[in-house]
Image (cartoon, rainbow, N blue to C red; front, top):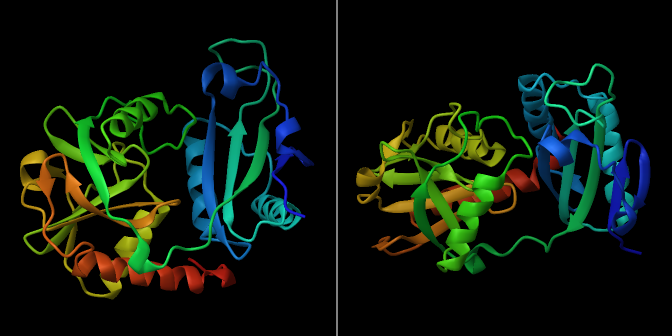
Length: 289
């Protein structure tokens, strides 16, 4: 039997009946961090890397994780098994807990953790992956984008604009024209035969899929630079793709009015897509580091 389930501080319940306090600080103040982790054939993909980032995000907002890593992994595995879904994603969120609404940290509160799972279809064959249309929009987010917090309103507004314009994703740029990342993805472009992506600064989220692609580039001895590119430079791109937990490696066919050269995916992106799938196939030993 397959079912949508949630885990709330150790208790497993139906997702539809899951409840948290109205005074939970994530709900009232966005005081929390989260991760989204894909799993394939009930195997969590790069779970250690995701939990490393969760720890870093929690540390950045001075939040203590309420469970040890082994406990979180065991709870996640159990929730996936009980849900019955072979392929899906796990959402994990940690908040500072429930307390009277105040901008100051509560003197006494217990951090809270929730998880839930949702089903996703099995991997789409590579030849059926659809290239994306992207648009560019100003990056109006705060200056701590490297922290994966639940404060996502600027991302949502940009993503909605993209959807309403018929695009799959919005690629964001700063006032000086520097391209940072997507609303829910990291961004790569091939310019003058060199793969370019924004460096892992406070202006982007250091994506797990992004790092996998960087590792593949090193292994395949493909020239790349973690160097910011501008909207002007983007006009010279011959290949573009985005990466994320849910999109994996997905090529783009166009950005605004720019049409990328055929074929799409291009030769470098196709290598990334194939090698990323190989990582998925080999991931279940959990020896990512």
